[in-house]
Image (cartoon, rainbow, N blue to C red):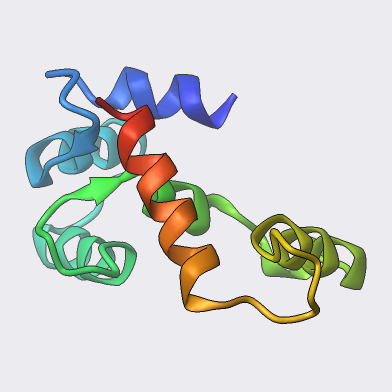
Length: 104
C-alpha cells in the first residue's frame, strides 16, 4: 500500500520524491505553508540528500506507538544474518549492497 502511494507521488518515476513532488502531495491534502513543507522535508530527509527515498518515506509513515518488542526483534533478526546476536559491519554492508543491486 505504501509502495503504491510512493510510486503515485513520484510523478517522474525516478525512485525518489523531490521537493516539488513532496510539496504537490502535501498541498493537495492540506493547506500548509511553504515553510512548514520545507520543515517536514528536512525532517523526513534523514540523509540530507534533498530528496525523500522510499526508506525515508516508510519511516515517516510508521507510527512508533504501534511497535511491539516483537517488531523490533523481527527487524533485528532480519539484519543479524548469522544469528550471532549482534549486527556486524559486514551484515550491514551485505544488506546495503543487496539493496543497491535490487534498484539497478
